Length: 62
Image 1: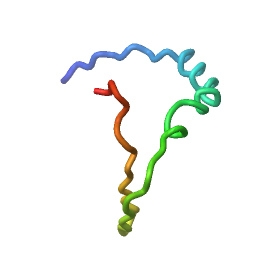
Image 2 (image 1 turned 30 degrees about the horizontal axis):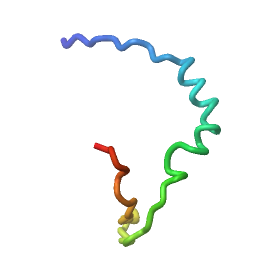
Image 3 (image 1 turned 60 degrees about the vertical axis):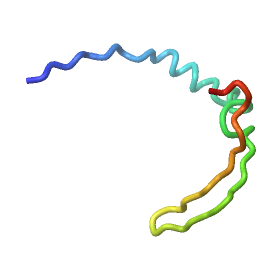
């Protein structure tokens, strides 16, 4: 039988703090400030395939 290494418990307090402050981070974090353009929409039987231009990466991005 294979032995498994038990993972450390996640820090629930950190997760709770991040969730509680998510409405504040929402103003500046993530997709909200991203500008993008839809280039093409391909309709598939179960989903839509979107081709999106998000521009060039910022300088210094590796």
